Image 1 (tube, rainbow, N blue to C red):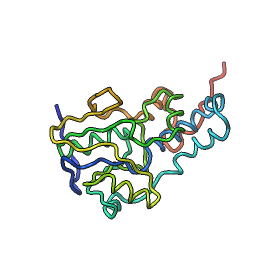
Image 2: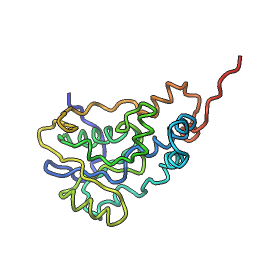
Image 3: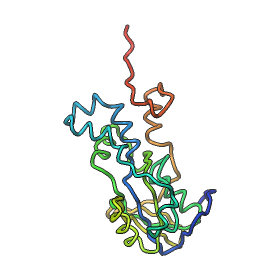
Image 4: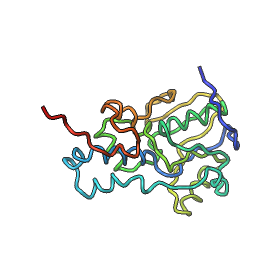
Length: 210
């Protein structure tokens, strides 16, 4: 079943348009994970790498979604809970259109990749923040305009008419699944969920003494 998503139809999204990611995915979740897994990270990586990983959320772009209109975007979805896959589901579900994206084109930093591999989480389903999924008639023109303004951007795919939501990873073709629990929340749950606030989840759990 396709599943319609209830969402404000602020702009325009139509078959033939390009999909663009402004920013890089997973920064918020990766930074929180890096601060939580400090000891494990330092066992594997240099102090400089750990410091960069723990400060990833300082590199998030800021701005209101409608601010991208001046660059040529016709619609915008913030990449937040559930990561870029949830954003793709929500945007295409609201307009009842299909999509075809190339996974390798989604912008992600190496620090995010390494932290996610260590924590065994999927970076494409990890909270981002300061990252946006955009639609445009010319994704390449939009990406160039964003890059000229100092905002990382990449064309990741296009909107299609047939409502299939396809993800290409080289020669492997899969379908987009419904949003799942955010990977950060999954890890937090596995660790016992001792921290009430995400902002405080950088704390380290003390081992109980006998």
